[in-house]
Image (cartoon, rainbow, N blue to C red; front, side, top):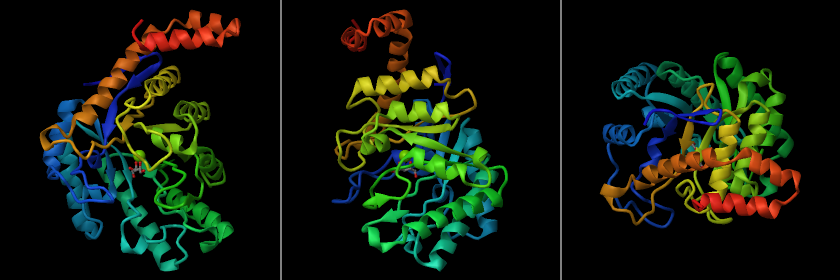
Length: 348
Ligand code: XLS
Ligand code: MG
């Protein structure tokens, strides 16, 4: 698709291989085949993505030796290059391994914490070799099921030590916290982007600590995603987004962007456009899941739809008359402003 300009922004799009998936959920097995990796890459390219988001073990199995890892990363890099794609980020997947049952860097077990750190350093090595500085941290199990199970003071200290260890290991990487308040744990430590940025400010190199905002994660917090995005941009810290949608306070649904609430999606696009997102190479990432009922041959439709809705909302943003908006603000006539926006979204 190549890039889209909208307001001050330059939008280019990314996606993770887990976003094209065989439909397993906590209550049932896969209902489709897993596309092989090359097929996924071809599908992503055809839809219009410019970059791929990776977990470390999306690149190659986490158990490979350093030499075998390096070979595998080179092959992946070639596959990306042959398809005209970049790697957006690498995220250490610290929530599936037997050593991270009770978390990575906040586990009570020193050996498990050491595993989490080593695996994260390896993710940094992969990032360097594949050509990205961005490390995304989704702290899936860095929290508790009951408050008493971990010492919160010790956990915050371990959090800071872990971030400092990564910043020290490689002075080129930047860390993007992708905060989510709950699931799989009952309560995550640092549940919001604001918490993470406050912790980032206490690290040895705050300049290299920022955030990736996922729409559904803000919604699970009860916060409007566009406000989370604007806040992070105002702090110069919005280095990635995961756009999707969410129907109320339930599990993390990862619905197609804009599919539940168009106005909420519009406000995200409008904020990104006004804030000049993408000018420093940031990608508009999707983190969306297909419905379980979707047939194999149409199981990429949610990706196409999310991009379609995003582009349509860029057009809506361009139709906004800022003088009209300002007039309603000056007159404190927010009812009229609301009607203006809602009717604009209806194409009136
Ligand atoms: C889960 C997260 C996850 C990250 C990548 O809720 O959104 O998919 O984006 O580790
Ligand atoms: Mg995400």
